[in-house]
Image (cartoon, rainbow, N blue to C red; front, side, top):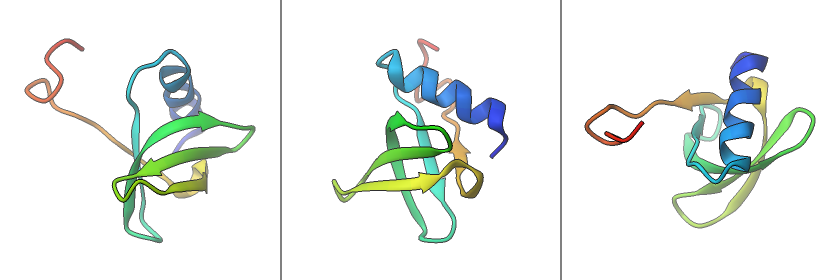
Length: 70
């Protein structure tokens, strides 16, 4: 993931909006809870917390049908 997308997703999470990422190395997906300098704390679908380097993550985008208010 590019740094500008990392910054955007962190800002979304801080604002209380949902931001989702996947980690190709572990094949996990999750919702961004918080961010540090270059890492994201993510809650996975298994309700576990992970800390991932943003450069290893991919943004998961949602369609208008899934999030029509965006």
